[in-house]
Length: 249
Image (tube, rainbow, N blue to C red; front, side):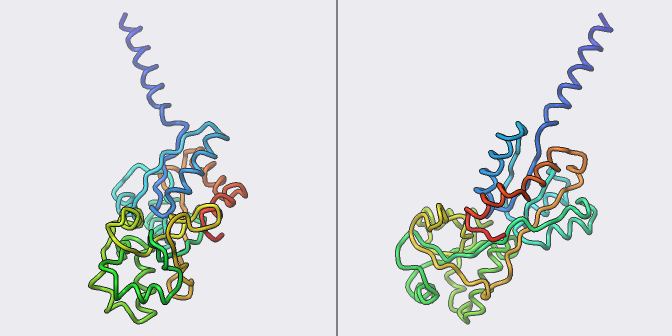
């Protein structure tokens, strides 16, 4: 009887240990959440493996990973944080690569926001303009770049409403809590056009590059599913999906 109980306990431990053997846990920047869901489905349909996605601002996810959050992969909205994790021995050296380059858009659910002049005009007649927190979100920092480059930051500052991340910023504008603001093009882009409302696609020379890096974290080093997913991200089918959301590769 004791032997039987021990055998059952061992089998239970083995089965419990294998519950997560065929999955990969991915921390992804909020701007890339929609593409990630589609990529996760493509990968799962092909391999049968599960992709568990957690989205947030790049800065917040970086802090979580440093504090031991159990992620296998990190898809950031910048290059700085993945490189920092590599230098801090929190990620696998040599696994980092650029999976996409984002584009910034000034967006509203209303019509008439398609040019630089429309943005400048908006500063004087709208109540609020939404951006992501520039300390945690690269798209927020890029938004500040644009305002500084155009010489309108001081004029705009009193009207700025910050979202914790670009996902929350999008929600502010989508719910029309805020009239307009800066979002990732991928959030408002569908089938080669702006899905709703109007947007000014901000020229890249007005802000820092939005190159986004992926990296294999220490927890994922022995996870073959994590390694397979990184390989999949660099495949042509994955690149086609990423481009379809308005990213450059």
